[in-house]
Image 1 (cartoon, rainbow, N blue to C red):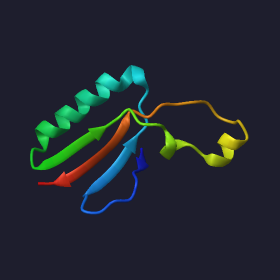
Image 2: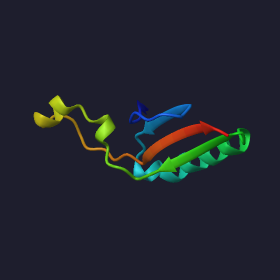
Image 3: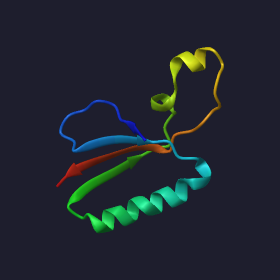
Image 4: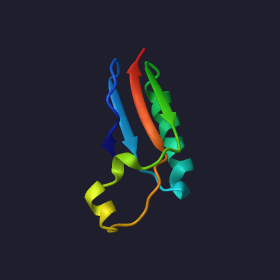
Length: 78
């Protein structure tokens, strides 16, 4: 998990790095969270590029593997 891009009016703005093979399980967990917390407006966007999870120094040096982000999750109270 990583702090999402800066914005205003949100309770939380989070990014999750999710392997594509686990995307369905992740979305199921999001749906369950929505059911348990109907007072929150939960939005999921993605897949998005993994920009929030890349160490630019390591990327420039060619270190580390590749990963794909499923998306950004934001939560706003109703």
